[in-house]
Length: 362
Image 1: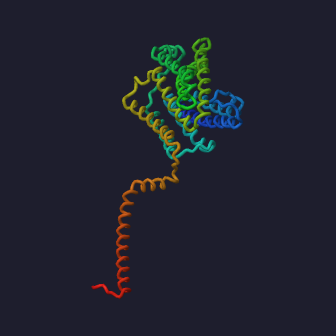
Image 2: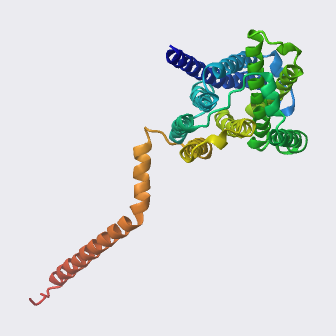
Image 3: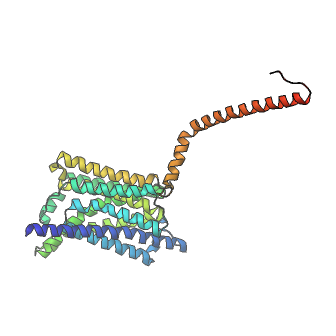
């Protein structure tokens, strides 16, 4: 009975994780369309510090879609392991890339499609080999984890890096470098996921009758989550407004997943109990995702599809063999033309001799 319940919970968590990716992937499209509508109206753009998007219903629809995705993602952690839920976020890359090609006229070439497939394959490998989390039953155990010197050092570094990116790097390079705003969202996202995990434990304790509301850690986690999510939304809007959606989404996934996995490894010390095979598998899966993201980013301007692939291959073959074939062709034609010219000259000479009354000897 317990085994059947475990399978039932697993499939519920899997369904919630997939639906979360669909909602989150669609939210990028809705937000982008809302920002584009504002740009056509002449409103100050989010990338320039404007907040006119708060009056755009499409933007709010995207925000609600993202909220639904985050709620589904939050619920998925209660039914399935985090090692299953987190890598499945790559599906949002695929959803966003496909929808942007239909609704935003952002072309997705063959390299991009291969990149999406590689991202999914890499996520699958990570699901199989990813480390297992330590189970935390209550907020007291969570507070012990949060007070660990390693995590405190990591959290301090994240806050310092975020402040430097926001106040020093962002104003000067945020408009031209896609990594600035995405890095802000990603590093802060590691702390937001930790807050989500803590609040999930608090909610479970609340339903179990524990006095979690009188625990200061519950309110600290809630306030920290609000601050982190607000900052992520602000800078993600700027990145979406300035840069291509099909680039923002996959790069954000890579950076965000890296930050979350690093934070989880420090907070829960998962990697200490992993076998060498699982370590290699996790690393290989993540590198496969990065390669897929590279294909999406590096070849975005290459017009290559399945329909024109044979033509492109023939062109490349002609380029590779062009010099040799042309030289042979020119030599053959040259020899043939010189032979024909010699023959013509000989015939003309004979004709001229006959016309002059002289015969050439045989």
